[in-house]
Amino acid sequence: MWSYIFRRVLWAIPTVLAVVTLCYVMLHLTPGGPFDSERQVSPAVLANLQAKYHLDLPLWKQYLYYLKDLLHGDLGASFRYADWSVNALVAQALPVSLSIGGTSMIIALVVGVGLGIAAALRQNSMVDYVVMFLGNIGNTVPSFVLGPVLILIFAIWLKHPDGNGFLPAGGWDGSVRYMILPIILLTIINIATIGRIMRAGLVETMTSNFIRTARAKGLPMRTIVFRHALKPALIPVASVLGPLAISSITAAVVTETVFALPGLGKLIVNGASNRDYTLVLGLVILITVIAVLFNLLVDLIYAALDPRIRY
Image 1: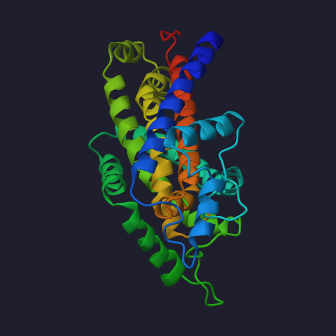
Image 2: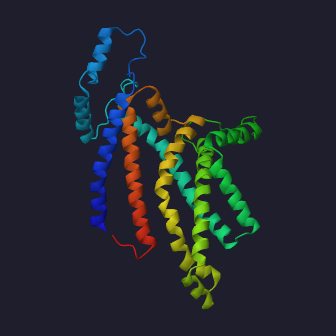
Image 3: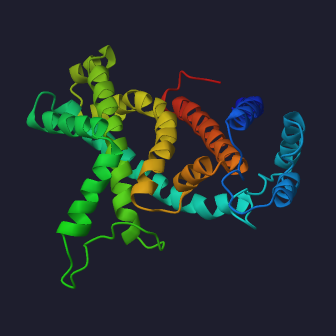
């Protein structure tokens, strides 16, 4: 197992390098530069800025400078945030996104699996219809619509006796009250996907021959579900954890914009709109590493759920 993890980590290096190279070239091929929108900047000052960030060098030399810094763990200096490095910006924004995204993923996994089990065991009942209906809403209603609806309900309609909204509509001070609405929004999206997949997986598993054998032996339904059917039914759920983690990051772009959160999503939007190449590249590298780690984690969960899988 450890040799497999080591090989996967080694294979991740060319993957990250390919992503960095492709994004680096694409960002520099786009028209305009990071200082084109500066006002009242003399040509001499602009030339000094370009020399400071190596923008006056050929592209391949700029790329080599970037790789050299990257090998030392330095994501470079931000073009738009004066006196801030990309490492410092990421270190400041990452805890916000991790607290929101990580909490929503855990809640969605627990609640989604529970709803999927309830729907599968009561197939074609009212419980099944309600779960499928909620799943369809979560999958079809976009987050930029659902987010303002949550603000309307919990921050405008529902109020404390002091006249303020029941929950803050946006902003961030690190307290739990500011995390609730963003977590609810991200959780609804992930619950819909996990619940539907769990239901389909358990329904298919319950028709398997080994489940019929367990029923023929007279085992209680609780034992059949939790001891025999749950593990194989969880394999499809595990397979979507990696894509869900990535989609949570992309959904965070909308969520953090709607709720004005200072997380990675806001940094991505600001970096792209300001042509802050180093900031965008740093975030792409971070997201790529997270994706690689989650895919590795999914493979390890496969082996834990199904003893026939060996690496």
